Structures are given as C-alpha cells and as structure tokens.
Length: 522
Image (cartoon, rainbow, N blue to C red; front, side, top):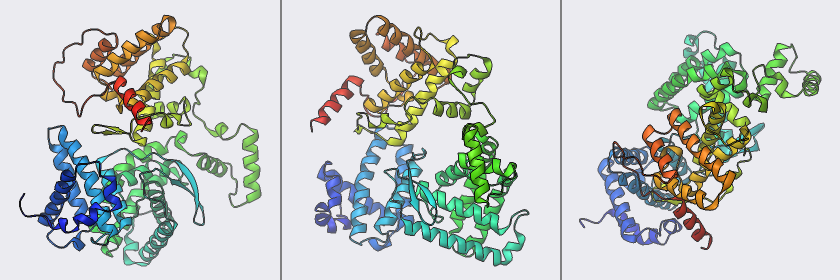
C-alpha cells in the first residue's frame, strides 16, 4: 500500500474504543482500508487538519460517495457503500468523542439524520408521547431520531420569536406581502419550527425538504387553526421573512433559498388537503365548529358546554360532514364505492379505518434484522403493512373482477392480504415490488403440503387474485405477475423478455425461517 493515511496515528486507540466494537464483525483489513480511504478523500477535497472537519464538509463528502455509488450500474456498489458508511460513521463518532474533529457528538448525530433523509425519502414513522415545555407537545420517539431535548426546543422558540420581533421592527417589514400581520407570521413560523423539531429533530438552521413538506402537508393541515383562505398566504409570508433573516446572516443564504423552494413545492398539496375536513384533527374540527356556531373559545364554561353537547350527539364523529365508511359500505360494490380505489388519499383514509392491526402488533413479530444488502426498518414495515391493507381493500371493492374464497367478507380478505404482505417483509425483507419467484414457489409448495380442502382452495384463489390485482394496479409488472403466479402453482416460469438485475442474493421464505430459528438460539 502507498503512503499510510494520517488517520492511522489513532488506529490503536480507535480499535480499543466502544465505537469499534460495533463494527468488529467486519474484517480488520476492511475497516483499515475504509477509514484510510475516507481520510484521503477528505484531505483531497478539503485540505486541512482534522479540526476543520465540520458538518458541511463531512456531508459534502458523504453525499459525493453516495451519489457515486447510486450512479454505478453494479448492484454490489450500493451494498459496499453502506458497509463503508457503517465503518465511517463509527470512526466519526470516535473522533467526535475524543474531540479530534470540528463537530460535537450531538451535532454529528443530527448530521447523520440529515444524511439518512437524503438517502431515504420515506418519512419517519411516529409514536406519540407527551412532553411539556409550557404546553402539551406530541413528540415523535422513532428510534433512529436523536433524543428530544427540552433545552433545544426552548431555544428554538426563543430565537425564532426574536427573529420575528426584529423583522417586524425592520424596514423590510413595510414591503411584506399584503394580508400578513405579525401574529400570522409568528404563528406560522413558531408552528413550523416546533413540529419540524418534534417530529423530525430539525432546527430552523437544518430544515430539510422532508421536514418542511411533512409539516406543511401534515400538521399544517390537521392542526393549524387558521382560515382556509389563509393557507395561500403561508408561502409568500415565509419567503419574505426568509429573505430578511438571510440578509441578517442568521441563516445561510443557500439554505434560505432551498427552504423557499421546498415551501413553494409543498403548497399545492397543502391547499388541496386543507379543503377536506377528513384531514383535520378532532381538536381542529371542534374549534372550527365552535367558531361557526359562535362559541367564545375564551369562555371556558361555554366551551365545556359545547363539548358536552357534542358528546351527547355522538361525539367528534358527528361533526364530520363527509361519508364515514362502515362494514355496509364495503359490502356494497357500487360504482361510487369502487371509485375510492382510484383516489389514493381516500383509499389511504379508508385503509386506516379498516386496518386489521391498528395496534401495530406486526412490528413485534419475528423478523430478520438484515440479510445481504437489506435491513429491516420499522418505517418500511409500517409502509409495507399500509400497502397490504390497501391492496386488500382494492381487491374487495373490485371483487367482481377477481375470484375470492367463498363466504369471505371484507374484513377477512383485508386481514389475509395484509398478513401475507407483512410476512414477506418480516421473513425476507421484501416489498411487493421486490417479490421474487423462489418465495412464491416455496409458499405454493408449503400450502399444498400443509393445507387441504377449503383452506387450500381459499389460498389457491386469494394469492393469484392478489397478484392479478397488484398487476392491474401497476405495483407489479405484467411479467412479474405471470411469473409469480406460475411459481405459486409450481408451473414452468415464463421466460423474462428482459433480464433484470436483482440487488443482493434472493432469500426464500424457507431460508428466512431457518435464519430466524437459528438467531433465536444465539
């Protein structure tokens, strides 16, 4: 090997660190080569001492490495990148812990979250817990997010309030868009900052597209107490404000420009969603209804009397004007009901109502933690489960087009389809779009050996119908649908018209069960 990297001066100490223990399953030579390569790459792009390694420089190099791997046609390259990232991230944690680089551990962890958002467009799943900072806060506790810190939340609230005060007293204030007052910009900014931190752990100085879009099309719709026409003022209000704080040097101009783009891009969806009260939280809905009915929300007795009246008349559900699905709705294959399947947002809401496992017990079932270049992720498991519920609903609502087991109702169809989809992700870490032929061949063999009579007949009807529905929906290609169906029945697989490169090795359900069984004994 050529000249030894300067990082090797810390090699012995790093090898004895707690961070190294996390990656000691990788060969020592691989870890050495990886850390030396990263050091040389940093030195080439950003010459200088380790103390110059800050968030911006580290992210630039990590982004460059990821983009290079993503552009490579070789499917192994992406797997190699994530192995390298595992090693590099522990190296950086060690260097931050020993104060050798220009970023502390807390900011480093926030940087890793930003990088993960860059490489994975999925929003984080949410678990709700209550926190107090002078108000009730619902904070995401997803395991991969940094710990929520009250002092950070309080600090965000303090300096964003100071920003608005300075803005309102500046000469820029007089050129603000029409219809915007201090109370409005303060309300919009404080809520955006609060929810971006609570749900994404992003501060105003590190917002991402995911955080901004998630808040604007999420809590701004469900929880923001504002008039419908005011939604059109959000983008111009924030854009003018961001220009001001960037001029003051309180926010990097590039970030301010990016934020404006993200906000503008989220506005159409936000406005569209805000027109449908099915997207409103119960608190927002009842506040709107009180306003419409002339209730003084500052009068505690009047508010309590109104809530008592609502509860006597059927509770919050009685306030919704639009349809509310029930079992009879699903049992009526009318054109109106079938039309739901063509509208993703309506189907999503209906799927939430008919989710057979709202407690998310499927997350606690046995699953592979990782295999080859695939890793089990909670948020992916939740997304796949939702996909399974929606597929089951589409199958039932369009049941005149497919063969379903005799006497099965909507609940049973949705339960079985979602359980089947969950199983493939838990035991093979595969989404429906990634389902391979070996898995369906194994499943078909298992069904024929373990089931008989009505049970086998039901399986033989449900699985091909599900594959046909996923094909018609566009989740599977026609070729995939035909090949998986043939594999399930143990028939010859139709030849592929075009070879498709598969990332990593394909694992069958049989292999997955064996791996899970072995893991339990370790």
